[in-house]
Structures are given as structure tokens and as C-alpha cells.
Amino acid sequence: MADIPKPTVKAVEYTVNCVPDDGIDGNLFEIRVQYRGAERYAVTRHGQQCLGADGTWDQGVKEYDRGLDWLNAHRFDLDTALEMAKQAAPFVTVNGFTVADAIAMQEKRAERHG
Image (tube, rainbow, N blue to C red; front, side):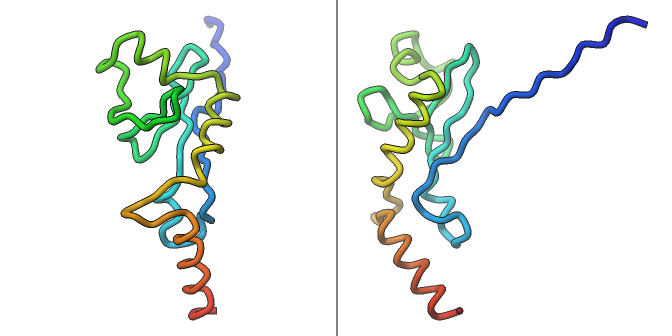
């Protein structure tokens, strides 16, 4: 019998969020750090936006659409990607609602139902 290769296990996605995920809208405010190969990670929102080294969100996240310069400005080592996501998380807005708005709405719902 041939040698059977041992499987490898790698964490390939992290979620960063200032809004508790036990709330109704918490997932809308999350940022994801996703492995893209070659020990590089992308910082994304909703699978449609990608955070660049300059701190701005760019539409599109697919590597096949982009050149090497774009990839180098939007792919990071894990520590850098996680730090960028943590820095951006407090400033996420969804339909004009800030993180603070979302947390306040969750607290009001909890008061009414708890």
C-alpha cells in the first residue's frame, strides 16, 4: 500500500467585529480576513470590498481581475491583515448606521425583550 499523505489543517478565515454577533444585525458589520495563498491574506467586507494598504476599501476582491501592483497593495501577512481589520472595524457603517448605532439598537431590543 502506498504511503498515504497526512492532511494539513490551516485556519483560513477570521472574523473581526465590534458589534456582538448574538444580535440580529451583527454579521452585517463584520470584516473578514481571508487566506489567499502564499501566506497572504485579504481583508474583506461582504465578499465585495477589499481593504488596501492605504486604508481605503476597493470594490472587487478577486485576484484574477487584478494586476500584481493591486495584489501587493491588498494582500498582507496574517498579523498585518488582522491589525488592519481591527483598526477598520470601529468605523464600519451599514446603510448609514455606525457600529455605535448598531450596538445601541441591540441594547434597546434586549431591554424590550429581556
